[in-house]
Image (cartoon, rainbow over all chains, first blue to last red; front, side, top):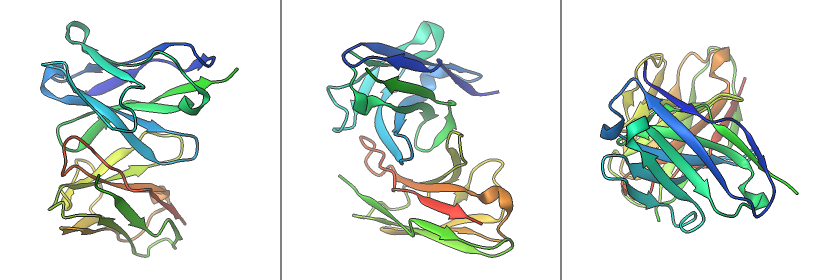
Amino acid sequence: EVQLVQSGAEVKKPGESLRISCKGSGYSFSSFWISWVRQKPGKGLEWMGRIEPSASQTTYSPSFQGHVSISVDKSTSTAYLQWSSLNAADTAIYYCTKHLYAFDVWGRGTMVTVSS
Amino acid sequence: DIQMTQSPSSLSASIGHRVTITCQASQDISNYLNWYQQKPGKAPNLLIYDASNLATGVPLRFSGGGSGTYFTLTINNLQPEDIAVYYCQQYNNLASYTFGQGTKLEI
């Protein structure tokens, strides 16, 4: 079974750093892109950026460029989404999804809460 | 950037009826359009890819159409389990995967 298993919920303070993960299984991890999608409470879906695992090549939405970093560890089939300094506006559910063109498999999401 | 506009933002329909959701792109995206269903508290799920192709396991009462800038998602014989928010998404520009704002379907 093709799966993306995401790390658990996080509660952080403004200014703190964070890395969340997304582990793929059941498919050739390096053959498909991984994207991250943000969903703020009660709001719609926002594409943040993607990584091509075979080359670790990243593409970011202009809305998120410079604020987050996407990386991958091919040896463990795991993708990461990282912040160096969180703020309250980062409170959201973050989904990873596997794709070439259509986002065909999704993780269950990681809830990130940023509050002082 | 390509903008995606869905209509309506919300709708209410009865069991057994047909509903149609539209999605308009700000420029020609050929058939590079996907539809997703998100049920409450769940991750999104791919319904339709390349504008009109049903994803694996999706009931035949769902169908997609359109090309260029205008697209539709139709649900025939509406069922209670179809309560969800539906999103269109373009991938014409592979450096950006824009979603529509979503359509909330209530029964």
